[in-house]
Image (cartoon, rainbow, N blue to C red):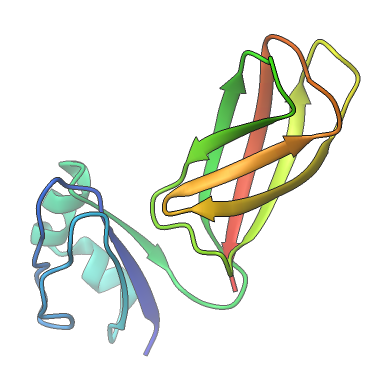
Length: 139
C-alpha cells in the first residue's frame, strides 16, 4: 500500500474522509498513512473539496519525495532570513538556491530552526531584491 502525507492547513482540527486515518489532524498537523490506491483516494469528491478549499495538502510519501517547493524574496540587510514552511522537520533535506541578488554571495546552508521555519544563511548580505528557491525532501 502506498503512503500519503496530509497537511492540515486549516485553523481547526480536521477529520479526513475515507476511513484510512480516523483521528482528527490538529491545526498545523501532519500525518502519514497507507491507502490502497493513491489516485482513487485523491479523486474522492470529499477529498477534492478539502484540497480545493485550501483545508489540506496531500503529498505522496516515500524515500526522497519532494514535499515542498517555494520561492522566497528577501530585501537584504543581514546574512540570514527565514521562510515559513508548514510541517518542516529537522530531518528533512533542504536545498536552497540563490536565484537573484544585488551582491555577489551564495547560500552557505539552510536548515529547520523552529517549528514551520527554515532559516537560510548567506556568505554575505545579498542585498535588495534577493530571491531564493527552496526544495525540501522528506527522506
